[in-house]
Length: 382
Image 1 (tube, rainbow, N blue to C red):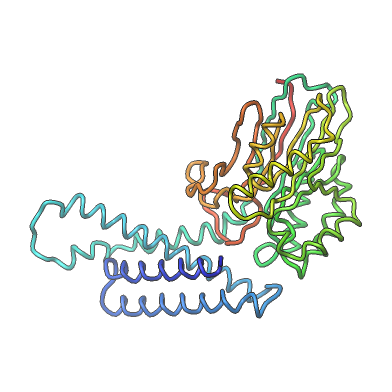
Image 2 (cartoon, one colour):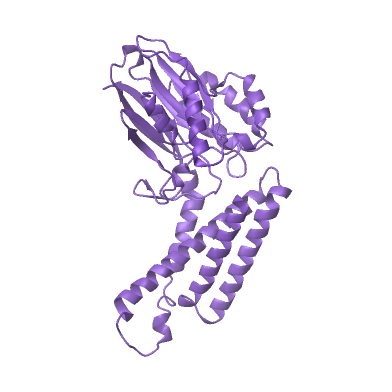
């Protein structure tokens, strides 16, 4: 279903670009560009259909071709948007309410200016070749009332949505874990969608396991929706033989103190329809909190960002989530395409601080205004 939607989107963008090209180019250049766009989009479509069948692990030339296809797709989107904005500006300032003789050179207002294709290419190359891999580090203070002395300054690192596979290799994962460890957190939590390629999932489990000793309070993991699609039973069994702590609708004591600190982790609900999804998410959260003492400080781990609501109902001090990738397109620190209730960054529900991680990987290798991140949370007394 997802592939069908992606192909429909590709066809729509190609159609819009073909209609926009005559407003910027003409003559032989226009004919060549039209043929180039058609050829590029046909080859991209064939690649999307046959790629998963032919390649189980994309490396070398194949990975480069995938990156080129992704960048080219985004360049087309930028070109269509910029051309549309230019035509709108022209209509508002030059033609609205006027009767003027037809002038093809004015209609092709940008034919002699390289600004539109140049900006489109720049936007595509920046997001596809630079920002996608330009991981940032975020420092967030978490104020908690009556925080006991042993917990003051405790530091938590969060990674999420790494999506191992075509666009995130084992070497990339090793580099990310190394950089995270150098930030000196006490504990690392990974909020799902890490193991996303059956060809390398077991090797990834072993790699993460080797880093457990770098975090004094260990590495804690919850499942996302993608683990359930990638031979879940094999991943689950592999994790059982490691030092990685997985939380599946359960809670665990992290630090014993006058007010103990507990981590609470919920699985991704495999339920269709919003009502069933919400009911299952509530059930998972209620189950996970059953053994948590009343005076405990809790940090909820939920792959889906609406787990923040469930954590708030149980009085969680902090709820760490992912899933959205920050929507991968951002404007001034906010999601440009806000598809979710909570899309990116810090949100508050009552006294609960929630955080929606922007992710470290992606299913589509492009980001602009929304770089991948390592989030560090430091507990302090409110």
